[in-house]
Image (cartoon, rainbow, N blue to C red; front, side, top):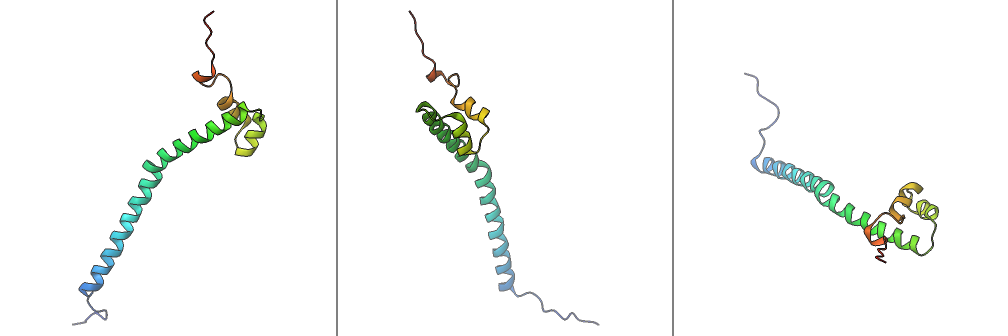
Length: 96
């Protein structure tokens, strides 16, 4: 009867291997959550903050083309964000 040349796995080594792969699975879960749930919320908040800063710069006289070049966006995108018709706050209501 031919025997195998590799010894049977020791219980401690098997436990360490399982623990390592459980750690990998948990790391993958954390990474997935970071890139989907948390990442989406954070991106929305940062985009809103960026847009407010661009509107403020535009309101203080910085041309849309200069803003577009600084933040690496298309000038039409910056004009859409900073334009006068982008929000209800920018519209003045006069009932005379």
